[in-house]
Image (tube, rainbow, N blue to C red):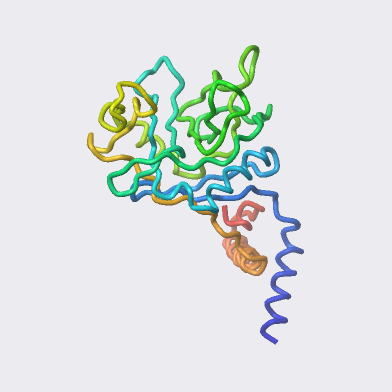
Amino acid sequence: MKRTFLLALALAGIALFGEPAEAGTIVQFKVSGLQFDVELYDADAPVTVANFLSYVEARTYDGTFFHRSTTYNPAEVQIVQGGGFGLNGSNIYGVTANPAIPLEVTAQFSNLRGTIAMARLAAPDTATSQWFFNVQDNPALDPGPGNDGYAVFGHVLGDGLQVIDAIAGLQAYDLNQAITGQPTGPFGEVPLIGGNSLVMVDSVAVVPEPSAIALALLGVCGVAACRRRTAGGQRCSARHVVGS
């Protein structure tokens, strides 16, 4: 009886609200004690998203750090970058990269503030594990004459931009000599918390999708709330029903 009731609720939810809008995979970043969510563009950048998720599922990004911030130079693009290096105790290591993927740029997605894109070498088809967040609109990173562009594959959700802005607001240091013993290298723009702590990526994980029954229950709750608003003289809309 209980199972039949739950199934009826699920079917009622589908009948009330129709097919759910297509949405991308949600991943959650936990960064130095803070967290934010990113929605990926599964349908529009399938190769890039699949590559990124392969690292996520292997837990490759856990224990890595943001190794580059360009926000100290207002004349340049404004990004914060990670996915390439990790910290094991006091030892810094390079992430083991999978084979490079083809550049997947899409006309409808620009390097706008709050988007995530794949980092690469000068050649177009060289992206592996590294990614960056656009701190501001960076049209110079979009494809154009003489410019292959950088593949955007998701965007930060909600107030997650506050975390990105906080990282971008940190001072960047040249740590090449201290880390590699060489005056040049990949650690010339490392953002540090308080001048001495790396911005750690504690974990990146896929956020599980709610079940059909859970969505139906949320829908029923939305209808009940809508009815209460209507009874109180308020106008009821689809926005009220979905609880947004």
